[in-house]
Image (cartoon, rainbow, N blue to C red; front, side, top):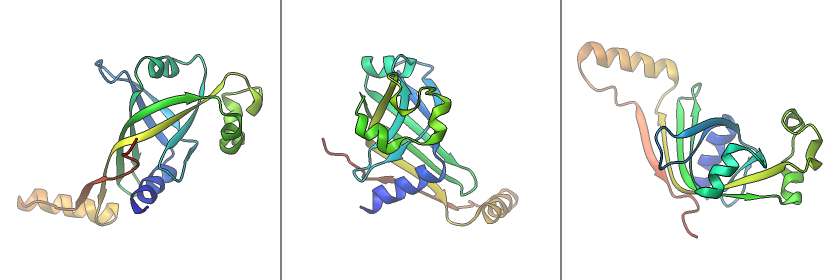
Length: 163
């Protein structure tokens, strides 16, 4: 599906997101998270420690918001979804990378490893029609002339919206 591929490209180009929980409270509980993968159905996967605050938050309220920003390409993605926590050993094995050992000292067999699977319900993206330098020139020109720079593309991606 084209929407999933666009989402996957943005996510994998900039694999760090701001992962927000407790969406009914202000301020949101937000922390940076490294994305472990995006599957063919558009689900986004993260590794997390079993006793982490985000796991506790998800157990109380499965709604999450993910924010990706790829400044080099001027692409931005906001994903609202539902999260579930699993200890699927096969999926952990599939998603494991050597960098994960920085958080899980005992390796991929660490009993504290859990996976968070986020099923997107609402996906919005923004990017520019041209590269960053051209966009900056258009913005400066618009500021001087008082006309709109009209350099952005905004849209929704229909990704995995069915239960």
